[in-house]
Length: 126
Image 1 (cartoon, rainbow, N blue to C red):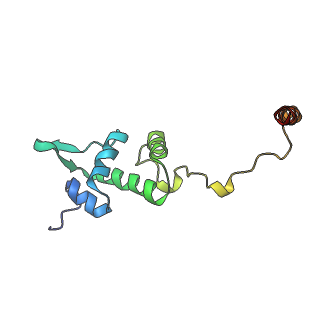
Image 2 (image 1 turned 90 degrees about the vertical axis):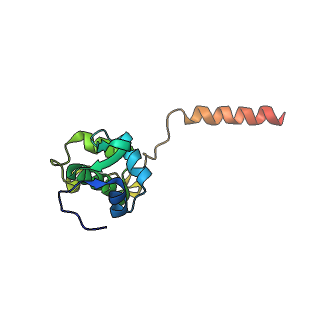
Image 3 (image 1 turned 45 degrees about the horizontal axis):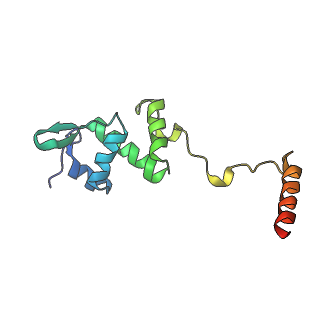
């Protein structure tokens, strides 16, 4: 395949091979991200405009490199337009290791639960 000009439209096959993503994933993204609307011609052939290609690259980066879920990417894209928010400024997911543990004080209902458990043990033993 010959190289295209930078502003040329890309077919779904060209874009999928460029990103290393199967074509059905790109079609799935079209259903999940309303801003992603490639041109469709006869026979449902998809042609991605340069702004669509940029959006697909951003979605791919957020999902596969930054670790976002589809729902998380939807929130990032809904928050600000892609041109307004560089990926470096987009909110990042919180790593599991940085989540603060719950306080160590026992809840006030714990003594009641212990009493109930002990009564059940005694009843089952009888």
